[in-house]
Amino acid sequence: MNPRTFNLCFLGFGNVNRTLVELLRLKEGELRERYGIAWRVTGVASRRIGWLANSEGFDPNVLCGADTPVLDMFAGPQVLGDIDAWLQAAQANVLFEATSLNVENGQPAIDHIRAALDHGAHAITANKGPIVHAYEELRDLAARQGKKFFFESTVMDGVPIFSLFRDTLPAINVKGFKGILNSTTNVILTGMEQGLSFEDSLRKAQELGVAETDASYDVEGWDAAVKVAALVNVVMGVHLRPQQVVRKGIRKLTGEAVRAARIAGLPYKLICRAERTKSGVSASVGPKQVPLTDPMALVSGTSSIIQFETDIFPSLTITEENPGLYATAYGMLADFIRAAGS
Ligand SMILES: NC(=O)c1ccc[n+]([C@@H]2O[C@H](COP(=O)([O-])OP(=O)(O)OC[C@H]3O[C@@H](n4cnc5c(N)ncnc54)[C@H](OP(=O)(O)O)[C@@H]3O)[C@@H](O)[C@H]2O)c1
Image 1 (cartoon, rainbow, N blue to C red):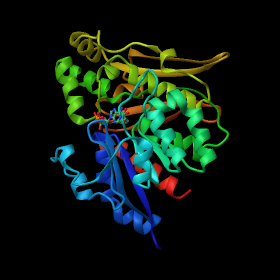
Image 2 (image 1 turned 180 degrees about the vertical axis):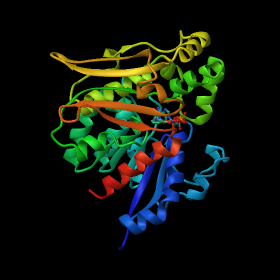
Image 3 (image 1 turned 90 degrees about the horizontal axis):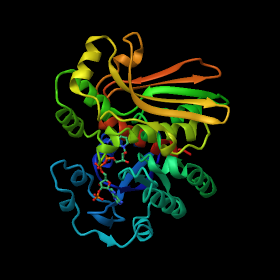
Image 4 (image 1 turned 45 degrees about the vertical axis):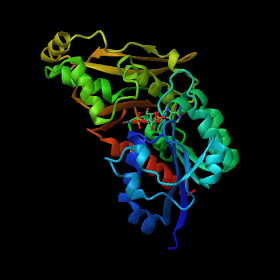
């Protein structure tokens, strides 16, 4: 089959988008042969990098150089002044948006995605902010433009949650869910159970690349609350802002309390919950002690779990064990393949 070539633009070039370039390279042959997809990277941008475009395509070997300082990667590209000029110069077909989370209002990622869709590109994001603050607007804009707005990597990395409900579970009613959705706090709690200090456990999560740019978002439960709100907005179809999720972080838990709870067979987990009520949805995030008979108790480190209660399946559980950054990058890759095939 004659492959169709897509111009890819990466906005934010940290852990997620750099890993995505690596994964695209690893899967290059498979994309070409099985899906008729070829690609080149024509745009890379971040605050420090600026708006760089090269319509011929950057050298992916250089982009993947893990040890190359990011600013040394780009020899002689066009440097543009704003996102519209950048998308234009890069002749973007797909935007991969992976900038840092802004809990308060989802910006500037919402503007980035709006600009990409207006330009006529598919928009794929790992950033939860736009989902909780502008899901309906961006979904409708994408539909008007005949493009895709996909965000599988925003919750549980690349595990199919949004595409599961969108593509394979039509006409199902989600009554609620319960889960462990924040890797950083789970890595911290697991580390504290093993005798590490809070700070050393947090450093471990940061070394694994799973912590938010500002790790207090994880520790104070914001990341989890945003994920709950994203699921409620998309899968339950109810408007809910992260600020409406009753939220408590893990900062106040001491190492002694965490170890004693584990020894007593009731380990602490940061539990996310949402349930439909007569007036909408009630949702919460907070540390809870879980009995060892509950599958949640077995979820440690970067692993996560979600249990959906639906009108058809009383309990539908998805567990993800020890994902790395490839799992997040995979969600974006899978979104790309779905968008390219549409
Ligand atoms: N890491 C994970 O495991 C994971 C999993 C699922 C989802 N996510 C989400 O994916 C996104 C990226 O995560 P990450 O781990 O790659 O973060 P990261 O390593 O901190 O990288 C963030 C990137 O975004 C850029 N950036 C931040 N604010 C920007 C702005 N206003 N305009 C332009 N660029 C901006 C940063 O570069 P400059 O500082 O140069 O601007 C950097 O290149 C986040 O929204 C996160 O919640 C991450």
